[in-house]
Image 1 (cartoon, rainbow, N blue to C red):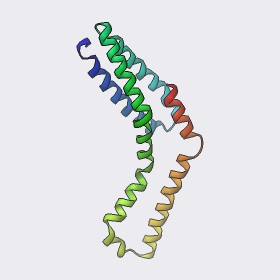
Image 2: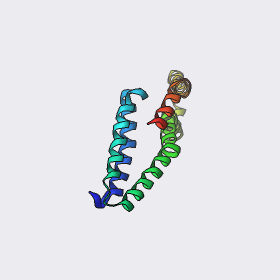
Image 3: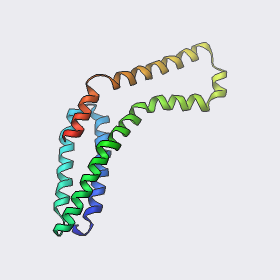
Image 4: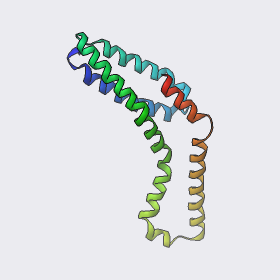
Length: 143
């Protein structure tokens, strides 16, 4: 274990990011995911403490700090934006690649498609406004 501290640290950090995304999708509440996030961070710090000497400890701590900065500044906002916008992008891709089918649509089918488009845009607007994004960013930086 002490030989591969950096590798374990990187895999735990990747697992932490994936587990947090899955838990937020399952639970749908940022405050319910926070205890799991704290436990994962304690495990990551314990992995850092498992270094064989001081030089390995310092290097693993610097790697952990760099990964944390990358996660909080780049990966977390990017994944949240992609997950929020994916239904809209899926409809855009569907419209783009099924253009021949769209020409043969009836008026009711077009109305259903427009209603779905409006519903997706309303969901994105509702998800990006309010308290939930603020709670998500606070829980990201606090934990």
